[in-house]
Length: 177
Image (cartoon, rainbow, N blue to C red; front, side, top):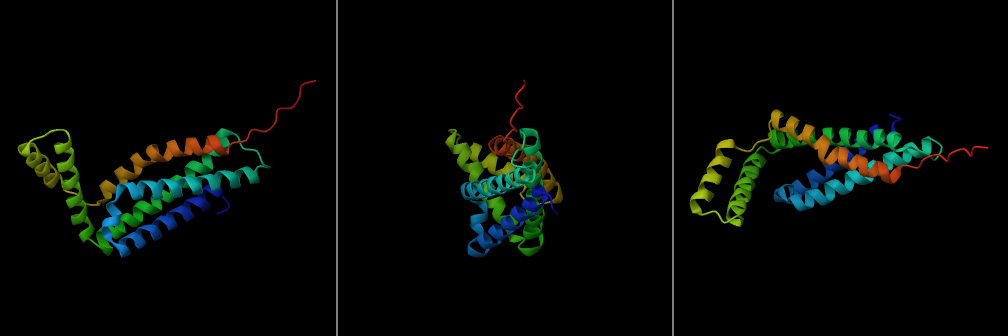
């Protein structure tokens, strides 16, 4: 567990579990607030990815190339998000299965708002709602795996690229005499 990427991945995963539990205890609706989730989630991941990159740089004598920085930053995201999605599965399927119904309600609200925003009539709204209800909304293993894999690319790898560019510090080039 000496790897900064593994260590910080575990830390961010545990912090995300605590965040989700606190949000759930306060008001389960908070779990569906995408602005809050985006700001807190991205903020926490960036912080722990930055920590991992800096720890790796210190281990490497104060220097770390972009390529070297990418490993601990991305590994932090990979491990942290894996812990997070596993907890989400447990939360939605074992701790509070009513969250699946709440998620369906939120999906219907979003579909209705989107159709109206684009000028759809009442028939289009009803059709959109019917499609959402038919598709359903639940945290199945398939949904979790799909969300995890997509999330590794965006925002995961994109964040790792950005944080790695910030953390990197190339060693000085030797003067050629």
